[in-house]
Length: 176
Image (cartoon, rainbow, N blue to C red; front, side):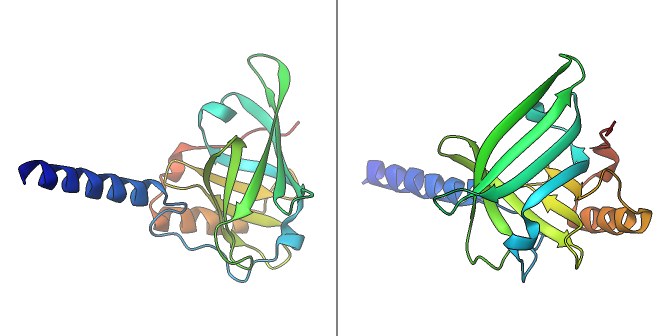
């Protein structure tokens, strides 16, 4: 009986870990609804980000979204590595996590492994976006142009801080 209890506790622990690790959006964040993917497609410039290994040393970073033939969203991230002095590009795919009118997606650049991609703020004209990853380690401010108005920047930074992000850690890549 003791072995059965340990096995039961192990299974419950694995299930709880699986549930927590499958989270695709930070606890305090809310994905934009209604969200219009057709208005979101196209090219975006990265205005700010929390740094992580796949974007380390990158400037002139862009993300371009378009449809794949199978109905997923094609994601092309591109940036100039200032240390290696060369352009880098990553091609991935994104899918909606639930309803297609909610900006809660998951994105993959490495086979079956997905991570959260959530638009948590966007202006009416789809010119500026605040994007959260699966947790407080991932955050991006995007714009259709290489700059963003100060009022939008202040608004998005406040939203991020209210969720729990440390916005003092944001990097502001150059576009030159």
